[in-house]
Image (tube, rainbow, N blue to C red; front, side):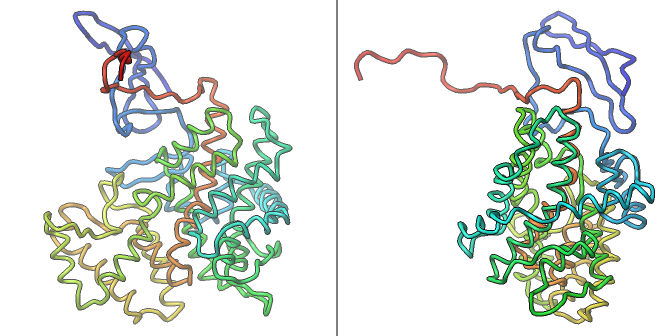
Length: 428
């Protein structure tokens, strides 16, 4: 980051000077931190659409190019050449692990996969039909009651311990939420399996027989984890950072991120996509719904198409499209009515002039929802899977904020438009 030039702002005949900051990629940023003290005014930016809230070295998105970089590496290369834990190591440490570091990191994560036995009973406080995300918010937030001996956020070793703990335990917690909802017994983790295979064992295994992971399906889910590991300063990441800026413990911060991700405008997109496919019901109805999607007066919208950030093709979608095909082929689901419907929608979106002109291409949520459905994961669990993967990014962003020498507790300003100062009448 450099600041080698200034820009000026003129207000009421007075001119003020501010540094212009230049990053590795992307637009320059005007440093307006002294605007309030210099000029007595603040900027208004609802939704922070034109405001850089932090300096970051973790993730970069170029929506116009359809580019996503983790620590400078293109997501396409990482998904092809690395597994999820290698990507987690990269995000945490800034560099990919060598062979020795990879084994050491994997073994460290495996040593933390179990949860405190009393947490098993914690689940019994929830109704069986509670939404799994509601359970996740509660259980993750409660981890600080069980693992409270490393809570000095200024201590690098404590931060590392908590990173390893929560990344290791999230698959266990997610799987337990699923098992509790279905009434099946919890499955303890198996450290002879890798991270994603172990998660699938805890999700789909039973005490009746040994679960044997399918390598094609494990690779598909591992790819989903990698593609969702981080995504710059989105709503949930900003929530984690804002909560963390107060010095809150990391488990509380991640719980806050999960709560934000639960919102249908954020992490619920792949669930909404599957619900839309079920609403359409059949390939025979596609024409009718495509017509509705083009009608601006019709409230129906095609879910899983287009992206707020990517003005071109979502790079993660290209990867997931291939993974989706591999999974459907492996499971013999090519003729499944719902998946045939999805493929027809995909074909139309890639060929129809209306969608092509508006760049409403299928996004990562479209494909990841289909893949998870094929794996046997219910739609209510989709956002839990998302939160499992994104925890790596959240914890990395949390630590980056805490180690930033310029970090301060978050305190956005407001433009007050309420009643002017007034006195309470003597007689009412």
